[in-house]
Image (cartoon, rainbow over all chains, first blue to last red; front, top):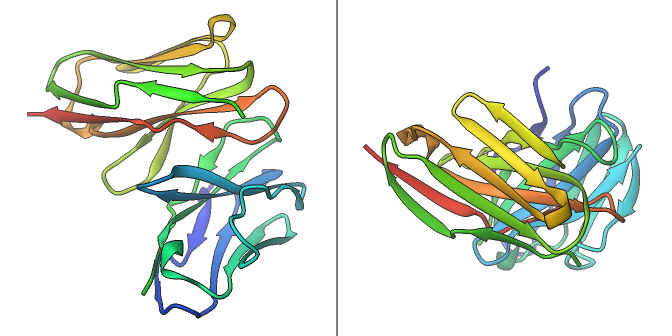
Length: 113
Length: 109
């Protein structure tokens, strides 16, 4: 299996622009997680899905952030409008079941200028 | 929410030395994982270990769930072991993980 796939790997955008991050989980995995990593706050869970349904989005920082999972093989995390403080590495992870071993993608490094 | 504490925060070793990293957590857990984040930022699974002991080559891990801690042992360290080691736990009442702040390991040749 190719593992969790994320795109783009790097994104540089200007403040106020819309940013869309994409994730393809491992085939057969039922749960998908979006994390953000910064020096100040470490690794934070933003939202997770089980069977394509959002279960807990309490980590989403603001209404500017939204996530969707239209099918079992694709998820997006959107920031609109983006701000410099959104600069971070965003990771996607998937598991075969709700409680299970998580596998991480390579991450998307987002820089908002 | 659950608290996860990792120690030590930083560790510097000479190549060939052994080390023990610790993860303490404040509540019962369904799941505990150890990850290595390499210098390129990739998060690599080391162990899925909610309880018991596992070994994989030079690495081994032990979780004592009743006492709410886990240990990661690295033997005969190599420079490629450098990076940040994270412990992540899932509380018994939720499906989401909480990560510790990590232990930054530097192995010098």
